[in-house]
Image 1: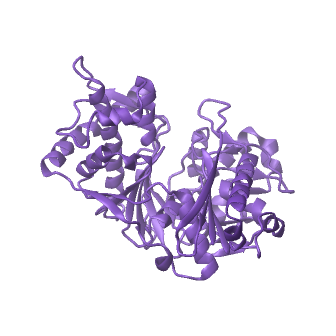
Image 2: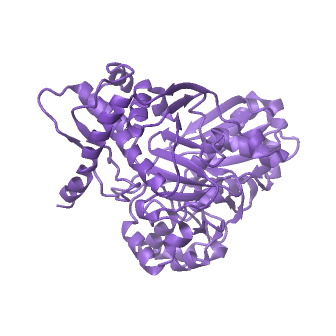
Image 3: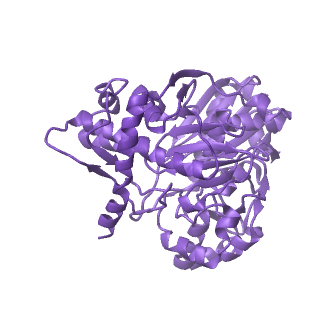
Length: 486
């Protein structure tokens, strides 16, 4: 038996997986986010630990024999969060999360202080990454910075509570902006630029390798016969990729969750920082990936649903499963700023071209198409970085909409597949990594792709019409940037 634990932003989810890869049970507990200032986003690390204990305790009660036979555990988690510990391992302040925008000025300072940053990390400095957050703490909370002795990502902190060891893996470490992504090792150069050194960092292992055993007292609490190994695990997107079997070069998927991710697995380090492409290590050894990241995807539809007071399902049902033509209205989905390709925390959304005759259905369609156009922008810069996206699996909450899948196929001009269990998420991928670490099986043996349920092919005429609308849509981001600045 194997366990995967996902430390998300909105919940902690734990799954129990059998030896043949089937999910036997799962438990989740909600989390809350604190926003003490506009643009800030924080969580109490103790809430992750409490939720982890509760999910594990519940599974131990429901599946006592299976939990007793557990051989491996792995964690996935929200990336980039800065969890600061003192010399005794105590948390010094709430964790600054991935979607916190306070460190924009520090990004420019880091790039000026470290001219080699792009070559080493393969990425632009963005407020969401961990390193700029530490510069912000050094500047605005110097007493906290002075007491800091360890910096851990969210899942690494939970792992520390589970094992007593400070360990992390390559995919999550890539999102700190302290990793030499090509060499899969901490960069002394970038660490020095933020006033740190290796002593502040956890030990690195591969995501599919064991990093040590579970604490004996916790194993006893959950009735485990022998403390299982705790694998390196993965950042949330890498864990989702493992769960989808996206472990070979060229494998691609689109996740339409709160944010959106267009992922391509690569067999080498292929950065394109100028267009805000994320070039990170995969959780599988000798494997990397590229991501285009949109900060608002399914959350754009949720925002619109709340705005008009109609449930998302009703909005989508009114449109059916296909459209005959692009919407007469354009939508920019930059409700929380944007990463790829603009790296602009100040980007803002808009409806463009409104007229009296436009109804709710037109605006709903425009929202779906706006996210699809943003995905098309990510596709373009991934291809410019050397990754050809030939087809994609569609996962996340947005994958439930046949209409959205059809629009995506026509906007991207490629086949789009919906898959079985497309919403299992990071906990399932983490459980697979635990199985690899505990058994020594190869990733290919443990990580088959899911069954494809339906394929959406581009319609040539509609794809051509969307090509023209996309060209027009692209013109409005610079104008909105100028309007926001003014």
